[in-house]
Image (cartoon, rainbow, N blue to C red):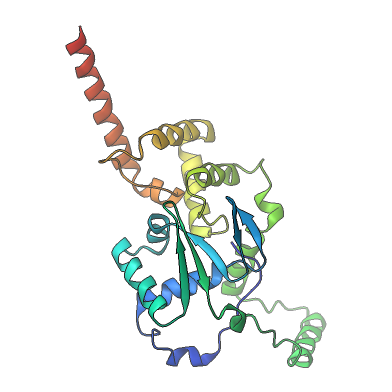
Length: 242
């Protein structure tokens, strides 16, 4: 997940795509996950205002169909909100006016902010709402230091999914919660073996698609059923060979 913040003016409500739920959600996701500084990724330079997506992964994350996702992206392209550079594995999205969402107005409000801080210290009362705390916690989880903590079982599991889904969002609380549930149910060692087996079969025509912990958790029953079918098919082949 990208660090930092974005600024939204209330005039966003008059934006042409504001009332289109899918387009608005897709654009907000792209805006919030765009890089804030340049970095190298799989031989590509990902610049500020750019983010990498995979259609299947993003479809699962936003819980909208791939066709609806394609439609939303095309609409954003048509009004020059974004550009798309596609490869056979992923797409690099550029938010064209990304800088407009980064302008820092804190200087003009420094007096107000300072006053609020002083009042908080004087009264010794927390001003952070539950929603704000969740956002802060999300940023903390996605910090570089946290993601490099290889002793954290959730980070280890997220890293396994990252190997075949490089667009996975490490800081997504829903994904981390699903990862935690899976670890509690199977244990990290057994779960790792399950996912490694799944990676060898995920390209099969009838194999359920699950490229992140939440999708894997939700489709676990279907994945196990598919594995059982393969076992039965293998047994029949052995009988025929004999």
